[in-house]
Length: 159
Image 1 (tube, rainbow, N blue to C red):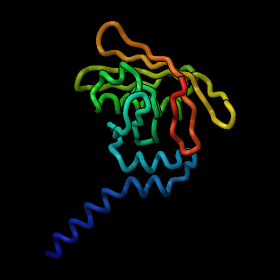
Image 2: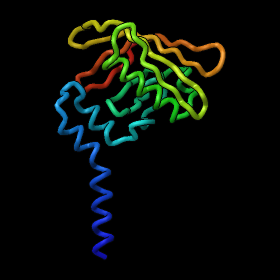
Image 3: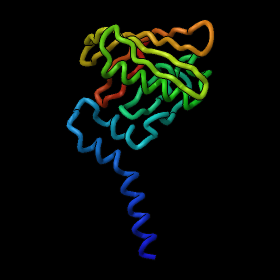
């Protein structure tokens, strides 16, 4: 009985480890999105919402709209859309202007890349335009958009 209790405590501690690591981290830019993301699957993301206002929570935060609210994204599997949204978040949050952030989904061979522009300020928010190219066969599909960073660390598609 005691061995079972120790094993359960170990499993719970390991499950909570990502949340604790993020909560104790020093990168204040990530904010709440990191805590939410750390509690979810860091590879695929977890979806919530409907239609064009979909939220995809990733390891680093959330993207509201973006690939998840686009026609191309709606034709992707949940797992593929989560991988693409995670790359979108990384490109918007950390990407250098003009440098692609790539993603791939080995199960299908689909891949893509997001190229963000230089950040600019709109009111109190920072925004970026981006181009997301998705290769799911021929020809590649391109989605262009603009996203602004919310105070809680999420990026919201505004166009």
